[in-house]
Image (cartoon, rainbow, N blue to C red; front, top):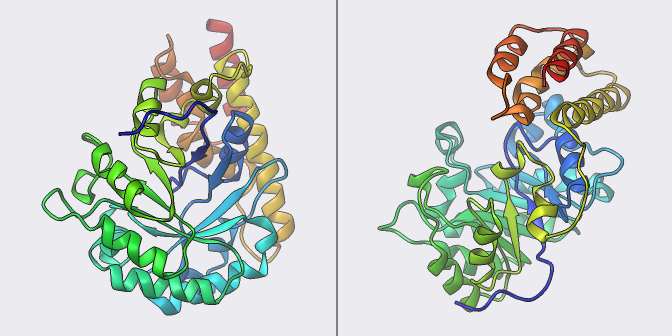
Length: 327
């Protein structure tokens, strides 16, 4: 493996279904991320005119460079999604095809990690995207279905032949889901063999993890789950002295403010769609995000249990105030 480059690494917020919405991306950009990916946007849902799917393609003021990630199973779906994204291309710096999501419902639909065994279909889908957008096209995938079958080199070749500019690789196999060791040797071999820009992904939480991945020679590193409870992990990994909110309550309140701002944006830009009211919208997002800021702190379990029964914005804020007074 190569020695890590003596430079500030390019760190990217990885796409995480249900999590990397606009408010969370805004938090991570403030926390030092250089770029972010949207949640996975269903190409099939776009093709069938599903309004709420378009909400995933919205962005907030203050977000940095943003890649729109789609998932689908056919070149027709991919082409349609690319045309739709082209209509709002000023929001994005690229469009990415997901060929790595290991969730059974995604695989069953013929999308996500089902594509790791079908480089020819990946080529056709990326080619269809390239033909229908002026944005740079990329691929996010895995090393293969399991350790006995490694397809990453064929996938990279297919992506390069289709005109993609980069490939993001979760350095695990589909069978591993999100656990187990990452295969950095294969990641290093890929970097030495492809002309694509390569982003490494997989369990980067500490500076040691980052150094190990950079030692493969990758051009950048994706960080996902480590950011869920700490959006400022990007600054810490870079060694940048950036001051986050002083306490978890302030962090959660900032995030809650962005959630409410984004809800208003959706309501204004999609008046014909149903957008939940503030109470319902904040409650759903709170259960996904906000309680994580308190993990490991005294009283966190009690707070989480209490929040699970709260269904109003005022109730959420009162719970934060009560927690703050107890620490």
